[in-house]
Image 1 (cartoon, helix red, strand yellow):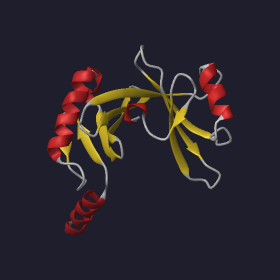
Image 2 (cartoon, helix red, strand yellow; image 1 turned 45 degrees about the horizontal axis):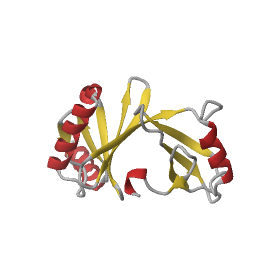
Image 3 (cartoon, helix red, strand yellow; image 1 turned 180 degrees about the vertical axis):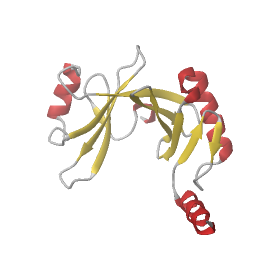
Image 4 (spheres, one colour; image 1 turned 30 degrees about the vertical axis):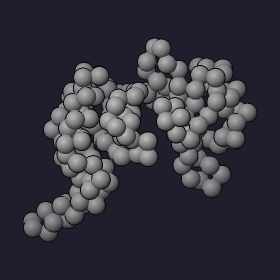
Length: 161
């Protein structure tokens, strides 16, 4: 039994991801502090009250922080700046004929147009039309890109510009 607890503890110490349930956070990363996770989790609940009962998966990104979670059967990600300011929430949506024509035309004519779309995320805000796509490049590596409403593509979220 001691071996089991040792292995679990070791896994938790080396895992670069932080999990939070509501505002109760468990630190499993040397990168993010408990206090950061608690503050970000509390803020996300204030922004989107339905996240109160969600399991939040926090990750440190080049642009700031990202929380991944499910609301019902829908996958969401919420992005925060490096300063901990809430920026946006995106919902995973099927990549099909319902995507905006300007996005589809921009994607097809971009350098990414030949890459398969693994997942497509749309901003949930009614006044913002930006998108996040996960692709697989020709070497089979994951590629992440963001797009604006005009079909222009970027390698970081639009708030980083």
